[in-house]
Image (cartoon, rainbow over all chains, first blue to last red; front, top):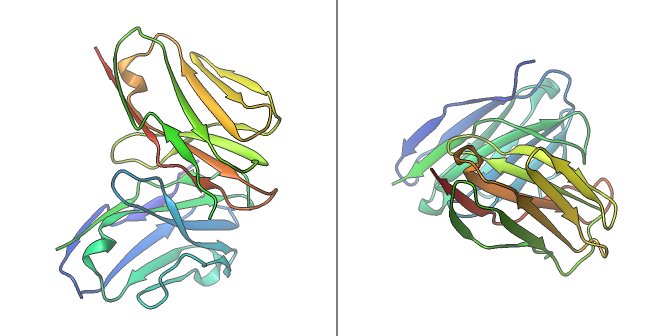
Length: 113
Length: 111
């Protein structure tokens, strides 16, 4: 079974630029999560989708971050404009349903200069 | 905001030694998970515990959930270099809620 795929693996941008990350979850997984993991910290949930609907986006900085999951499969996370403090690893995870085992992708390491 | 604390933050030991890392909160968990994350990879689930006092074993790893469901420990026997990584606990405070992650314990096992 293929795991969660993410791209790109690495991205370096300058502050105030825009960036987008892509995630393809495990086939059949209804729930998709985006996490931000700052160096030295645990993952922090940014947004959770159930199929193509948003379940929890309470910690998403909506003035600059946006995410969508069209057709309930792939998802994109966008940052516009980026700030220095956005430097982190962005992890995508999926699960069959909410509240059970999550399977994580390898993450995208973002560096904002 | 409910917070999970993990200790120690860093641990460096020699191959063959035993170790224990801890996860605790001031609130009661409905369930708790332990993950291991290697550099450049996403976290991988090791175990889920749901019952107070529960003990689960995974080869050389022993997980214990506190009786009051506010804390948990992970004990590794005869650590190996392959055990090196970031050990994260994640707790859910109510059934069906999302899991909140702790800051992790970074373990380094030296050959």
